[in-house]
Length: 233
Image (cartoon, rainbow, N blue to C red):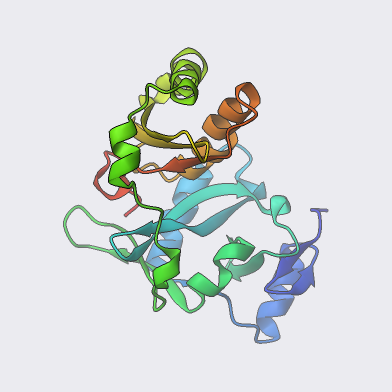
């Protein structure tokens, strides 16, 4: 039996429990249209252990005044008490807790425009304070050649880039706030626009950097993912 998960604050222990919640009339945070559901189910079927996977949807950040999103497959049992879990027919959908209010009432649908693709229609807009930190002229002028910047660049070249090169990815330091110990990183290649980019950043790149440079306070992704080779939509 999977570990307990939550459905927008309601405890659930399994897919069967989620089905009961639907019968009880609990509204999901994000709805999935039938066309989009079939596309997602087909993609999950190609993954290892598809019966244990759910569709995860979360807000990755804010770009150009709008939310940008991650869509990925992860075990349903990984959901925590803070996450919203629902069923779209027999497709489990997980919205991480921090994204629930930002995605409430959104709809995942299939668009036939262009080459076709998934589209997340979200009635919510980011607040001004949610905008990502900007690179001030002072930070850009400082460059990346300071003591911390040199160490970050070394770890990226020695440890990070060889590990993400397998799927054509690369990470480069583009600015370093030496005073605040914050590194600004741009992803390219297979990592630009990839739906897994946030996981790559937080669980891979940031973990490697902070392991080697404990005084590093933060790592900020300044990639324009919307124009990448593997855009989410």
